[in-house]
Image 1: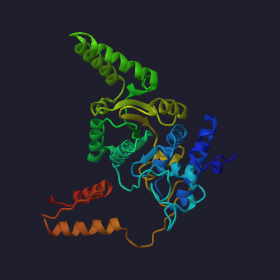
Image 2 (image 1 turned 180 degrees about the vertical axis):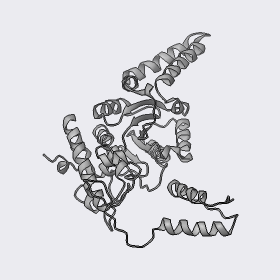
Image 3 (image 1 turned 90 degrees about the vertical axis):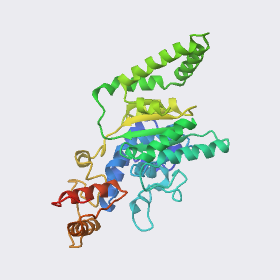
Image 4 (image 1 turned 30 degrees about the vertical axis):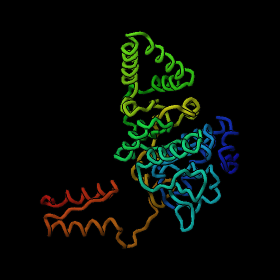
Length: 361
């Protein structure tokens, strides 16, 4: 049974059982791999975000709730289940489906993007707009660990934490660099701590401690520090707690049951929340799991082998032309330097300069 062909809206997702959701995840991966193998695109990132995408659509009321993808590299599954499966073969083609989120393309795309680290700030802006319109629906910003390295993301975290707007930030961490003390125990505790009744009880208990004559504030601070020390030992979340976010995670981003449970718990928050999920870049496609860097943004390839179908035509790429010209200029002018806002190109330029025998300033 092809479930994907029956899906056009979030409501269709909500009608599925959790077992069917897992079957749908596999069909989505097959569709993404098939189209990207012909058209090229951002494969590994989107494959890693399939279960997360399904869980978000299952729990939240999209597009009334607003979902913002950072960059849009991870949004192919989102496109497939929001009425664009039939036209998905036109991905990244002239007048076809965009490779990124695009407001004009679908009401489910909460923000038009094409560069990194904007989702938290954009989400905060949408939160303010909803607040002014007395709209209590949720805003969810999904950001990858790579995008979280930019200053703009931290400006967004800082402003959101200060404003106390009820933004939900989901950190999709596919670097797999978390140490061993954040495994099953952390997942269990985060799902438990995120429960509405426990959050409410914790807030009421805090108010009770503060109300105690003379010693109330001191006891509350001791209790708060104890909780933070425990969470520091179990999770890497204290950085986000410092920004006044309630932190939950890390959660296995491919365990759709756990994702649904915790998203239900954190829905309609009173304060900013950051949910940390860990995923495997390229999940479900062996070559992409083994070489996620190559399959991050890839051209046409053979599905069975993962090998590129591109045949050399003798025409140099933009990168090669730019790099060779920079080397020529740098050899003749010691004071030449260049800058690029895109990290990938910036890294390439750094490697070019390292090949030059004398320093360039």
